[in-house]
Length: 133
Length: 178
Image 1 (cartoon, each protein chain N blue to C red):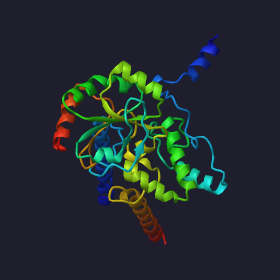
Image 2: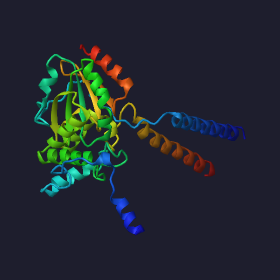
Image 3: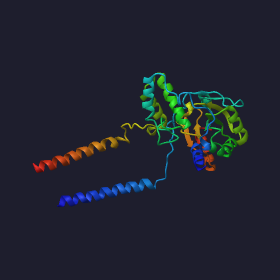
Image 4: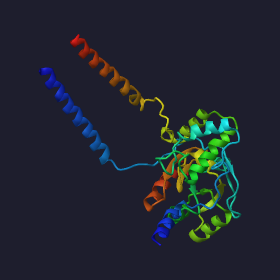
């Protein structure tokens, strides 16, 4: 009985998340061309779901994530380049929509600091070894 | 010896700086809203079929007819959308022209929603796969955009409207030339 209640709880979804239409055609269906599907997958893994913001649109079952997969797959099928689709979304939602960080005025320290730390570490090691010799 | 001491002081200062950064960031209120990057830019091109028999659909041309409008993104299955019905009614009463986009909705559900919560909309377009919602940079329902007479997006409100938002939206409409 407890197990049944637990399973029922697992199946329960919040009322606000229940929309009335079936998922978009390409929300759960792969593209026929494996190469195009691979392109779409690679892109979708690096796009943020807007409903569940810590998931990619591949991981999320939110209706909006399904609609975003549909959008990505139909555009790829129409021959659009994955990075053009990413740029189209960034134009609308800002950098936050993308999990692939680009170098910009706000993000350059992310790329610069590891290089600086490596240089610093190298310098320290070089000085110590130099002293010993 | 001196250099070691200086180095240790440097570490202390670095630690204090990191701690101060954490304290500052943790004391800020949480903000996980994803705002549209299209504020100040034209509404994307679209033409949506009517979401319900009683209202015409919605296209970009309707948003460029010289009259500033509120564009409400909603759905009959969305609870906060029902909660903001009084605020939308108040906006309509005070002269706002409100057009809407219904996300992933069936005509009979939209019709029942309007019967139950009131109908402040002059047009309702049906966006069955959230295509126009994505084109607008809208990240959920409900959201309310202010669009000026030339079809330029002037303002975006994310989430349901509260009483204080009515005055804000009316002011935004006035600034947009209403």
